[in-house]
Length: 249
Image 1 (cartoon, helix red, strand yellow):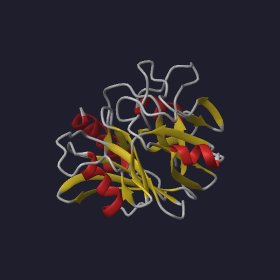
Image 2 (tube, rainbow, N blue to C red; image 1 turned 135 degrees about the vertical axis):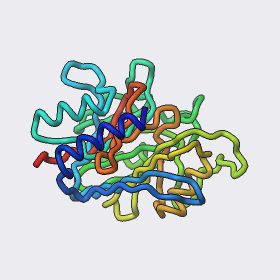
Image 3 (cartoon, rainbow, N blue to C red; image 1 turned 90 degrees about the vertical axis):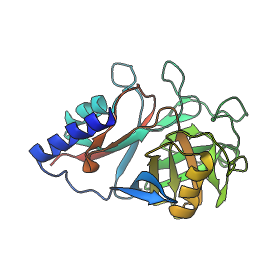
C-alpha cells in the first residue's frame, strides 16, 4: 500500500510541479545499518498542529481526507504522522489538547501495553517551541500547551534511554516517534522503514539525531505523509494526527 500511495503522490508532483518551500525538511537516512525516514520541523517557521476530528465530528482517519479539507482553505498538508495511541473509537488514550482545548485528560498511572510502560510522556508545542516532557514532570510543571498529545514509552529521557529497553530484545515493529532539541525550536519526527526494537529506535534519537528528549508515538499504526518524498501512507484508520499546514502557491 505504501508503494501505491507513493506512486500516486509522485504522479501528482510530476503533474503539478514541486511543492512550495517551507522550513520543513524530510529525508531518508540510515543509522546503525537500519533505514529510517525523518522530518525536521522548525517551530518558528512551520505551522505544526494536531488534528483529530473533522467538522462532522468524525476522526479525520486518513491523511488524504485532511489534505483535501486543508486544500479547500488554500492550504496543504506538507507533512503528517500519526500522533499517539487511541481507543477503538479513535479517541486518544491519554492527554490530548488541540488549539488550547483539552478533550482527553492526562493518564499518570502504569498500565498494560506500551503506553503504560512508565515513564511515558507528552509532546507539547505551540508559540514557536516544542518540548517532550515526562508525564509526571508535565503534571508538576503544568505548562501551557496550545497542542499536546500523550504517548509512551519515553524513548530518551534527559539524554538516557528508557531504563526498560533491552539491547538484545527480539520485539520488532515498524515504529514512529518524535524528539525535541534543547532550544525547543526543532521537532524531529522519525519512522522506521523496517521493524526495529525499542533499543534501536531509542538510540536513533539519542545517538543519531542527538535529541535529549524523545517520545514513542506508535508501533501498530505508524504512517507518514511526506509529499516532498512522494509518499503518503494509507490503510488502517488513525486517531490523532500531527502535521504541518502550508500555503498552496
